[in-house]
Length: 124
Image 1 (cartoon, rainbow, N blue to C red):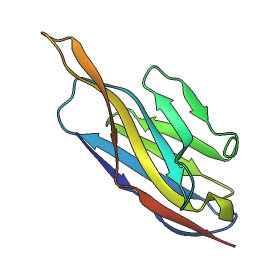
Image 2: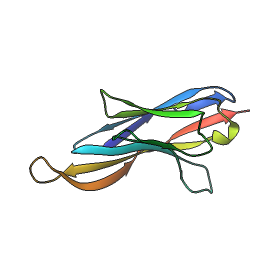
Image 3: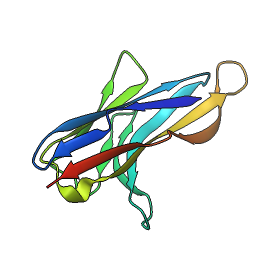
Image 4: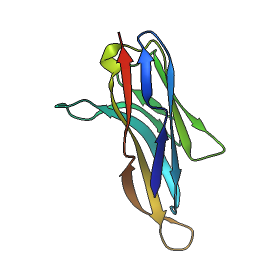
């Protein structure tokens, strides 16, 4: 299973930007996909998560500014980021929780996989 991230780059404060993450490979199904971020010396933190059942959740720091949504035709989630602040500067990592193949057509074990990360820099 591979996660391909795109959209990192340099953005001015107050601007907007979008990140995309596409899952490919062999797996039974997806439980959720999400975006996390990390800055040097700090722990990786959840930014936004989209559950395939339809639920979303956000970090308090990005609520009302960021929106995560799914491309229904693909195994893709997008993160739309508005009103960006310098403190949003971080490496953003896509994460996927999925199921491998079990017996017959049933889902098997759950697994978590990560993308390589993409840097978003917000300049003041």
